[in-house]
Amino acid sequence: MAKKKKEIPLPVLPVGIEVIDTHCHLDMSRYQDDLEEVLDRACKAGVRRMITIGIDLASSRAAVALAAAHDGVFAAVGVHPHHVAETNADAYQELRELAKNPQVVAYGEVGMDAVRNYAPLPLQMEHFRRQVVTAKELNLPLIVHDRETHVEIMTVLAEEAPFPASGVMHCFSGDADLARRVVEMGFYVSIPGVVTFNNAAMMQEAVAAVPLDRLLVETDGPFLAPEPYRGRRNEPVYVLYTAQKVAELKGVTLEELSRQTTANAERLFGLKEG
Ligand SMILES: [Zn+2]
Ligand SMILES: [Zn+2]
Image (cartoon, rainbow, N blue to C red):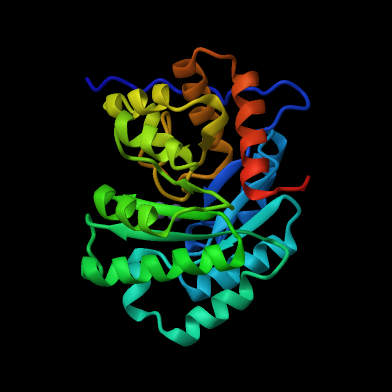
């Protein structure tokens, strides 16, 4: 008989304490039927602010519109490595204009991805560098996507440094050594729900290597739901499971981890109360 998976109740935050979901994709179709409920569940549980991330021109427009329509929702605009092949100079020009909206708190997500390879890596690198330069010109923090392209990403960032507005390695997937180098570069490390999986030893070591004042947490919803919802649709409220696991790994209370990661997100993204 199959063993039934244990349901872990949602962690409860003390009154006045919040956790910010620094990376989700609220414009995606998997939220189209119940977005208001998703936002309501998050808000009631203490996830009152979140950043919805653009992956191409259309989703960046949608992110800005969602942020304008909902208190506590902020936006990032940019072109994900999966979508660079179909992005032209006109689209980049419009993204640059979009980025000037007051709801936009970061440029991204941008980066490289050697797992799916929707575009050849040299082309991905060219678009990544172009957008890194744009983020610097706009003085916005960068949100970087890196899947098995650690060397390429770190090379571009080293060549384009310094980054006065800083940035974050979102959905961090490297080891403790890479985490230390990211922190040395002045960036933040954002931990996804994967950290709750029982095969996440390398990520758990990376968490241990990052100082508390450089950690962020995220869902990357609708993808990568943490335990106990692994394999299902992810949503912002589940960031609480991730925060709880990270707190445990850092040896601090959920309250302290929440205060610290919230302060970090406010500092990096210049967030105001939603
Ligand atoms: Zn990503
Ligand atoms: Zn993402």
